Image (spheres, one colour):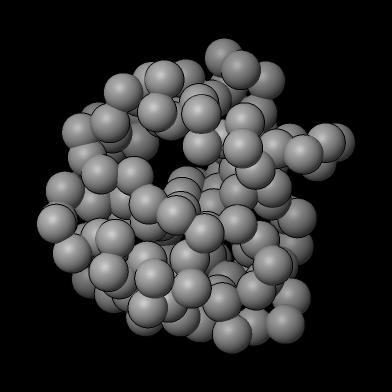
Length: 120
C-alpha cells in the first residue's frame, strides 16, 4: 500500500498520540523497540517516512539516524528527527535527515510533515 510510517519513540504517551493521529489518517504504524528491530523494519516494511526521537532510553537516536542514512536500503527514506532539544535542527543537518519536529508539536505540524513526504 505504501502508507507505512515507522515511529521510534520511547515515551508511550507521545507514541500513543502519534499512532492515534496517523492511523486516523489511514497510515499503518510500526513502532520497533530495539535497534535490530528498527533496522529490520526500515528495510522490510518500505516506510514512506521515519520519525525518530533522538533521546531514547538505552539507544542513541543520533547513531541510529547515521546508520539509517548510510545504509543503501534505507538512506532514501525520509527521516524526521523529534526532540525537545534546541540541538535537533543541528543534529538533523549533520546526519542528513530530511527534517525535524520540535516537541511539543501540533497535530497540524505533524500532518504537514507527513503530507510533504507522502508522495503516493
